[in-house]
Image 1 (cartoon, helix red, strand yellow):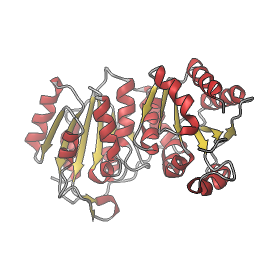
Image 2 (cartoon, chains in turn cyan, yellow; image 1 turned 60 degrees about the vertical axis):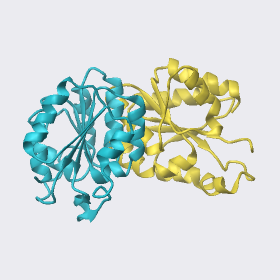
Image 3 (cartoon, helix red, strand yellow; image 1 turned 180 degrees about the vertical axis):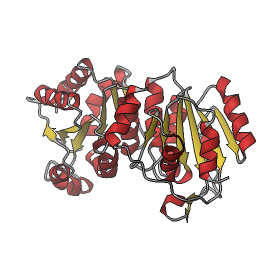
Image 4 (tube, chains in turn brown, red; image 1 turned 45 degrees about the horizontal axis):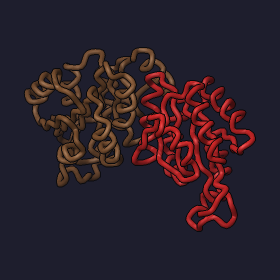
Length: 183
Length: 162
């Protein structure tokens, strides 16, 4: 399962709930598969998708907030896991698409092949931590978490591959404005 | 800035609508931060970029926010300021200490302290330096900027050695 396929599977279960997507190919894929005004494409500031998601989750406690992260991204901001674990936002669903490489920059390795991100999340007091590498498992987890309290992490193991989607053609200010207006 | 003014400044910004104060601590700002802790309005992040990310999320939820940090943290945050706050036009107010303001400050404060005004200018992050006499006026300036969707910074010089 490559990243694009995994994102397609996950968004089957997300209708108009807000998504904050990490920079690089993750945001590009989300944009090309299912562009919506409830998507916040973080095109720069690598590492901060989960922090932005946390800020929204704290202020919108009645809405479930999804973060589409990558392994390279979250490894740049592990402090975010400790802050999330401390503050315990019940409505945060943190999905990490994990291929153990920085695919957007040419496939250089990350350390997630030897240091599992789900273990770090568990140590940081995430309430629910899941790992999946196929479609049925992902769909089952997304059904199960509907009744569960967060913070929740789902590590989706993906394989390298696929082409880069087109760049996001919406201006950053417009991404922000439309997201805010639909939040 | 005197202890009482820092505390008044926190209360004033909060009263004027700033709902979230996220950041990384500094002794220069400790009375401001303590006032916020006493009022249960402070969120301490692990790093300045993280604080900026959290505040950006809060701003997406239309909740006015301020990020506080040392000037060392400003140096840490340059890319995030450029590629998140300024790129998306987030109306974030920064409160930044100015370590290395005094000539005989600690050696680790001197380099950043010396280049801080140039650094802010180069970043095109508009800023004002706060003193005991002008803090309220400068807070009004920052609040006005944020209402116009422009990020800006308030700078508090470190006028003591410890």
